[in-house]
Length: 278
Image 1 (cartoon, rainbow, N blue to C red):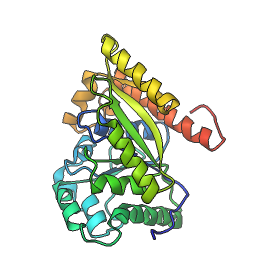
Image 2: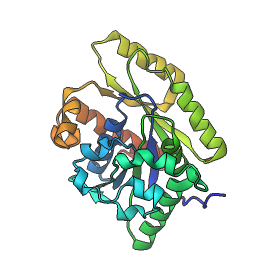
Image 3: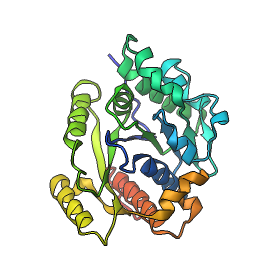
């Protein structure tokens, strides 16, 4: 049986979609930055071997002396891999290409699906013992439904699904939902859908509006009111190793992620019976 899951903060959210190019990593790093900007303490856990979340938050390859690979395979404590970013209140556990081999290395490991959950629980206990706080851990999952993603969902309290406003937006989503249900049934009975985030929305395109309407009809109030527009500044920011809020806080993409962060915080307070304006 897995270790008893520690129930106190931080809230752990897996940002997942096995379809690439939907704004998953963009959402993870910019939502994390926006949450930090409104006063939350946040850790991004980069669980994608491509390491794009690490690059997008300005962490160079040479700085990644301890990574999520070490946490999963060598069971290194999460706090030993934390790197503070340029955003006050935001730290990251980086990733590198070594993580691509983790699934093979863990293939015969006992309780291999619980590796990250155990690490997160230890991290929560370490924070409590040190008298430190953290509000959110956002896990940037790889664009596939592999052992890394299963580990993320087993460790998480909830799953956030970025969904591109394009014709094939719903294609493959049923497979993701089945995976979430399997994890809930067999590994993490507390796992819930945090919400669906509509990304790359183009208000000039009738197709975007139709896709958004279809998704809202299908998922109801699980779809966030905030939509993330297709925005050049959002696309440019990672090449400078900066989240878009540091790159251009006035652009539509930055304002959308700030709006999403406020909505996420309101969602949490509402769930706790403490609904107040964020």
